[in-house]
Each structure stands twice: as C-alpha cells, then as structure tokens.
Length: 52
Image 1 (tube, helix red, strand yellow):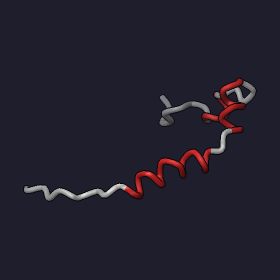
Image 2 (tube, rainbow, N blue to C red):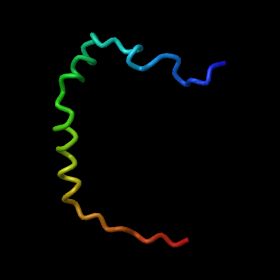
Image 3 (cartoon, helix red, strand yellow):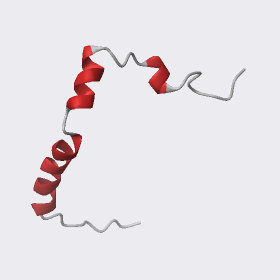
Image 4 (cartoon, rainbow, N blue to C red):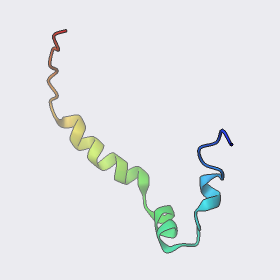
C-alpha cells in the first residue's frame, strides 16, 4: 500500500494539449481574480459576536 493519495503528479495526469487545458493557460487569471476582489473589498462586513 502506498502513502501517496495520488500515485502520479497531477501535471502528469492532465493532457496539456486538451482544449480546456490550453484555454486555462491562456486566461488572464490575475485579472479574473482581481475583479471580484475589488467588489468584496468595498462591502462592509460587520462581525458577529459568538457566545460560548
């Protein structure tokens, strides 16, 4: 029995020539992640005290 959850590295299991993998490499991930971050930063987030 092996201690590894995944027997191979993930990049060895994914076909990097598959259209979805190619698309994922072409997407502007920093811009995509930054877009909702600006919206969330502007929202007021009031904390709630939790009684134990």
